[in-house]
Image (cartoon, rainbow, N blue to C red; front, top):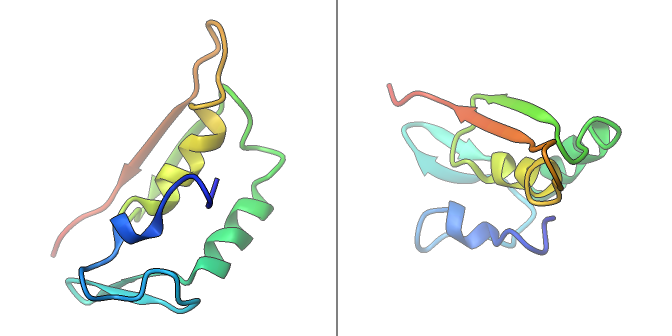
Length: 91
């Protein structure tokens, strides 16, 4: 999933999207380092199946939400369609 969803589309211009460190996204927030996204996906591996329903609270840029969708929605077949929703706020 991380090879299919390009992190450069979720960071500010001028950032180094492929560096394994958090990157600022504005509003005093950061996008987590890639290894943290990989860890989150590995912890949810048994839950992220085609047809899964996922709520990503505090989704920030939406990068991890897009990764969730790679598992739950993009791979869905038939009537068992997955749903992924990300919510966040701007102070």
